[in-house]
Each structure stands twice: as C-alpha cells, then as structure tokens.
Length: 494
Ligand code: NAD
Image 1 (cartoon, rainbow, N blue to C red):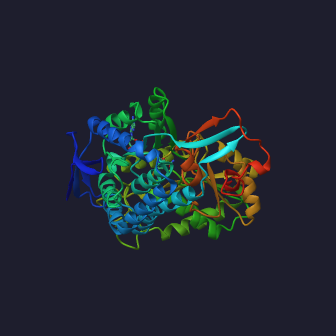
Image 2 (image 1 turned 90 degrees about the vertical axis):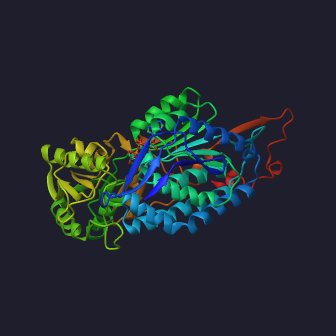
Image 3 (image 1 turned 180 degrees about the vertical axis):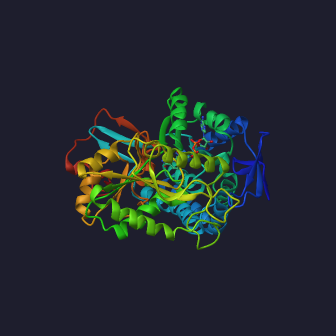
C-alpha cells in the first residue's frame, strides 16, 4: 500500500496543496494498493513558474547538452525498467509481455529523440533570411491513463530535445505509474524545473495548464472530447497545440491476404493493451467472398487468448483498468447485440472462473454494418467488428467512413498493392502486414483523431518555431555561398 502526497516541482518532491484523496485498486483483484492526494491548481501554478525559470537557461542550451540530458533520462528509465513493468501490471493490469514492452518503449523514446536531435539543423538559409528554429517555450504535456509511462516519456523527450521546459500532467487514474516514472526521471539529475510532474484532475490542473499565459505549448493525448475543450481554452492565449486523440481504426484484409497469418495480427492489433488502445484495429474489413473462411479462423484463433492474472506469463489479456471501463464495454456489447450484430466470440459478462477483477470476454462481432454504434464509436475495450465489403473501392470507402483517422492496417500478399490502398486511407499512419509502428516515424491523426504529429523529427519540430532574420545585405544565393549544403543541412535531413 503506497501513499503519494507529493508533486515533482523544481527538482524536488514537494507536498501537494490539494485535499482530494483517490483510492487506487489493483484492477485484477480490486484490492486497494495505494492512495493518492491529488495536486490542485496552486501546484500547477508553482510547476509552471519553475518551468518558466528553467526555460531561460534551457533555451540557450547547446545540442550537446540536450543530447546528454536525453541519454541520462534514457539510462535512468532503463535502470528502473523492472519497477515500471511491475507497476504497469499492478495498477493498470497490462499483461507482463505488454508491461515489459512499455518500460522498454519508455526508455527508447529518449534514444529516438536523441537520434533526431543529433541530425537536426537548427539554422538554415531561405532566400535572404537566416531561419533559426527556436524552442517555443514552456510546454504542458497532458497524458491519458492507458499509456502512462510511454506518453510521459515520449512527450518529455521531444520537448527537451527542442529545448522546452515542461509541466507534465499524467492522468489522475495512473498515479502509481506516474510516481515510479517520475522517480526514475528524477534520478537522471537534470537541473531543477526542466521537467515538473503534477498529478491532478483535468478540471483544475489540466484547466490551469490550458489557460495559463506562461504556457506556450500544449501536447495533449487523450479523448477527442477533452482535446476540443483544451483547444478552445488554449486559443485564448494562442498556445501552440497538438492533439493526439481517439481512434476507430480499420484493418483491411484484401482478397489476396494470407488469412492464417493476417488474422492473428489483426486480433493482436485489436486486443492490444487489453483493447484499451487508441490505435487498436477494431473494424476488420473482409471481402464478402472470404467471410466464412475468416470467421472460422477467428473462432479458432480466439482459443489462443487467455484472460486472467496479468502477472502470469501465459496471460494475453488482462483486466480493464477500472470499473467504469468494465461498465462501458458491457454497454457496447449489449448495444451490438441489440442492433443486430452476430457474436462469434465472447459476449456479455465476465470470463468463466473470474469472479473478481474488471475482466471482460474478448469479443468479436460479425454481420456488423458500418453504421452501427459498435462500428462508429470508440469502445476502448476488447470488442472487434467484422464488416463485409465488395471490392477495393468499397473497402477504402468503408474504412474512410469514420469520424476518426488515427492508424489503419492493410493485410495482403502483395505489399505494393497494399501500399496503394494505404495511400487512399484517411489515417495518420498505415501499417502493412504488421502491427508494431516505427517509433522514428511521425504519429498522429487526421479528422477527429487529432492535429499535429509526435515522435522523431516531427515530434521535435512540433516544439520549435522558426524565426527569420533577414539582413540588409544578404549574401548571394549561389551554390558556393551556401556552405551549409552537404553539412547536415535541412536538405540532407529530409
Ligand atoms: P481523457 O481525455 O479523459 O483524459 C486525458 C487527460 O486529459 C487526463 O490527464 C485528464 O486528466 C486530462 N483532462 C481531462 N479534462 C481536461 C481539461 N478540461 N483540461 C485539461 N486536461 C484535461 O482521456 P483518457 O480517458 O485518459 O484516455 C483515453 C482516451 O485517450 C481514448 O479516447 C484514447 O483513444 C485516447 N488516446 C489517444 C492516444 C493517441 O495517441 N492518439 C493515445 C492514448 C489514448
């Protein structure tokens, strides 16, 4: 049982001023494991002030200094990888393989950001102007509960690479994970105020970050509804805002797909993170002619999904994170049945033998119309829909007929053909015959899945702003007068 009553401000763990205390329970057995006193608006203000002081020196830091900081943070997270893995299982219910990946990913974020920073030219010539890419200023990094360690570290890595001090607001529903990650980050020994961590409610800590004039940039990951509220509040002070939001991803099995290989991948994508993933491929689009075959393979493949204790290495699906999530998923399963979809796996209630914990049955519906609620709304649990299509054009139309556009998947024996389909999909990224992204590539959504991109070069640039210095007697623009060419210039970078 752990009690957390501090925030991390100005390089130290300090008592929070808020008086609301949250009980933290293990989602696998509903036993209490901790209590968290939430930070409040005053704590957010102190954190913003600390970041603003740190910003002065950080703006002037060299690339080499920031590379050192990123590598220290990477090593610090790696050192605590086991603790991050364990708390991700205990507080969140991630199966051990996923929890292990999360702790590795959290440390890799700093490595990838260092790689992008190493190669990034902060100054370039455009016409008569010298264009300097400058840090935008203090950044608020607001994270959801379903990816605590990864979101904190990926956002911090990009902000720091650019030279932005930050105030991190993890979700109030991931307090233990945030504490373990913050303790690890603290052990890297960075100067006070470069990053601050304040766990509190969106309605006060989050609202303060969105409105405070000393915050220049918001990097938000969470639901579309909250993203809209943040964008509205942030526009008052013209903050630079990126929003990584909800999804309802399509996974298209083309008519030539090797279904024996593709379906396990499609299920892995759909059920990843216990189904609580923005990028889960929850709409599986199947050609009419292969429906029967696909449904048979899905039924057989579902036998491989073992729901239970997330600490057991044999478990592939842990509990949902909390009771509200359990109820939400049950409502959607009931609605799918009411609206006429056919259950081919799972269904309402708990899996057999699991009387405690927020466990649900991994569920697959067939005969789903793209207009049903289960096909249109983000369920955020292990509930997948099989939707039939007639030809490639129909598959693309159905995939694109969604309010969201985060990540899509295409499975085919012909990678070139799949790529051509991928080009027609309205999504921030498209994965062909794979379910793991490349963390150096840009990540983000189109339509109501968000604005802006994270990770790698694009993540770094999202915390920078160009300043043009145009001189009276600019040097001529012939090749000989452009010594930056071939020496790590932006032209070389792209
Ligand atoms: P949420 O929108 O409820 O909360 C996200 C964060 O915003 C939390 O820290 C919360 O405290 C804070 N917040 C809430 N109200 C706020 C306000 N008015 N002002 C400022 N901050 C506020 O989302 P959630 O339930 O924590 O996460 C699940 C959602 O996040 C899903 O929709 C999922 O698809 C999405 N998500 C998206 C990505 C992505 O990269 N696109 C990744 C993970 C999760």
